[in-house]
Image 1 (cartoon, rainbow, N blue to C red):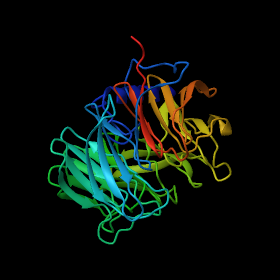
Image 2: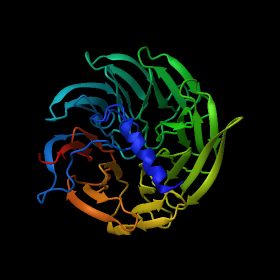
Image 3: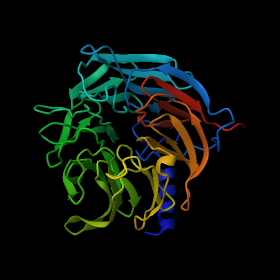
Image 4: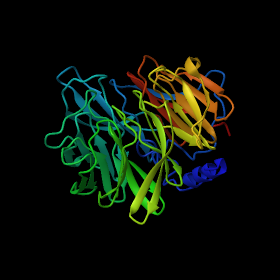
Length: 415
């Protein structure tokens, strides 16, 4: 693939975002962590980024979804064996709490706290808790319209509970499940009726489904322990699978480079592979293009101008820093090593710049360049460790969180 082809595809993706000002689900409008917002700061002021508000939270990694200037996130509070999951709705401009909905969800697991990001439509909020409580809540009344559990009969949560964020598709909502009947399921948004369950897809507790377009076909892609699977979002029918990549604990989903090319990555020694899915007379063929030993453990990479950026790890270098690799051949163009400790932080991009928050709470703004890591600004904004929650950007405001607090930053440039 030529680099200008990748650039054109990204530009086309940006023009097709549903609501540029909203960040209504995990990864933003199209789950790519790419925003089309403009008019933002090109560098932080000398005194750091402006903090609009700060609120206290329970521990966890549940990032925010933002729609209609309201912030939605799943919190987790309470002492051991008396914990509750709390869906919280805040005013974006002030952090004022507008409403909450809570339910009992006692239990203990590694790295305690909240997990997934809600998905928000014009009238409903969909949320999956760490023990599989899957709720549809009416935004007007704040009441539960329907609920089920993604564990299903005979299902088990992982060592770190569940961290799967729901995916909105037309009038349905699609989730990864732990049910023995299949690892992906689709429900009617209004009634909660089960529309389909993909029996061929194995269950995984931490990877969230992603919608990609290959040729004329929309597909729901899911990374699992023994490969990658894709099903029809309308029927759940298996479209293709690839078992040439394995990961003991898959967390990030694929990154689409266009032309059917999907970058598959994971930690725990899994490394990364670029595959190409090609429409054929029998359905779809899958071929491997290249692979590298480096991979992103938690967050999906960003692709820009023919390069792929991600927090890289290998068995030999578990904190190998930020990586920039060539999307054409997988060649490592640069890595920061421990000079910029990634600490499993995530990336978000807008206006040609990449925002990176590491696991220690430093927010960095860098310019994506092929020849070297080029930092523009940095600011220490959060505290503690294990700061792995995904960021959310809407209307010039960036929402971030650590294990004790959530903050909203004002990134708008002065008029």
